Length: 174
Image (cartoon, rainbow, N blue to C red; front, side):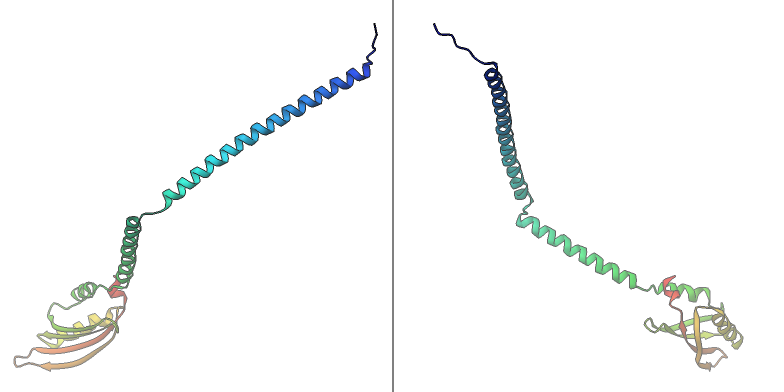
């Protein structure tokens, strides 16, 4: 019978090789599992991205509706700019109502909004009321360059007159 001697160094090497082998096997399996997980996760995410892209594509009806809404939006913006530039003439009439002498009435007017001028044709019973009306208008800060264009005396002593004056733009914005 033969007796074999196995050295302890070889056993230690065998054990070390086994440990390295099994460690490498565990690392390899972890790598394969990780790779498989990420491969399937990537496919799933790509499918989701694809479905989201398809969902984002608009139908022709949606595009037409969006164009219509944008058209209305442009019209609203344009209309708003027109309203911002609008001058309210009613404020001028209110100004005249507050600043007209009780013995004077106006029968006609010509308004030029671009030049801020107003020509008034009026009628009064006497020169005193006409003078007071002129003073009332001259005292107003919003009235500039008041000019008496015409004065005439009627058959019964009544006075017909015509004023022309420039007014401040603030009258129309009040």
